[in-house]
Image (cartoon, rainbow, N blue to C red; front, side):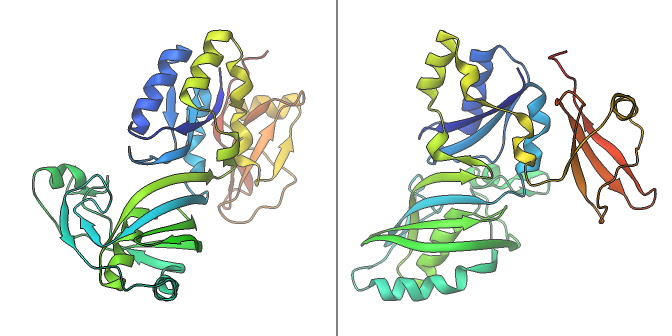
Length: 297
């Protein structure tokens, strides 16, 4: 039972709760998700099962696409609709052209300050733990990358945007910062993750449908192979002798390009995914980083 489920997380539950549901349905102890979604958010949540839990870390650098509903005229302590209102503004005079102009600096390489209600750590504690205790601390800004940011609907005070971004981007901070630029305040009203790496909302399975699939015995229909997150990497097929060397944790020579910090995916002669190798510049060889059991044999 090794693979990745593309789950359409419903609103109102945590990402951890989705993992708990999959554990219950599958009976598999090793279950983990990639890319936490807040309870307010919905959409694509990749969940690894079995050996695939070792693969979700490779999604960290994958780009994501969101559809965000931003409400003008409010500021909350959480930067979204779940928080306490701390300030109200007047957005009635703001037109689409002003919003378009305000969004320009948010495209490309930017810096964001994480919200207090986030999982960023400060002296060993998560910021949201401090925030719930009424403690506010200074946060350092962090780099983020926004590849695309488009208005797709303008019905003031609600603006709907689509955001394609890299890792570490806070859409709540984007909404808050936009409100500060416009001078009226803004909060994240709704959020849907449309895409995460190779996983798309069009192919995501709901919790209820997944429960039916487990009950009826066709749940494997929704299970993606765990190597699908590595599709952009070079691949190599090795013979049985080289396979055994890799399984023993020893480096091997391969006829692949070998730039610094390069990884590749390897397959056995009969087509099974063997593991992840990293090129060692000092040795000139490929070193096993993750090796997987072939349960099909």
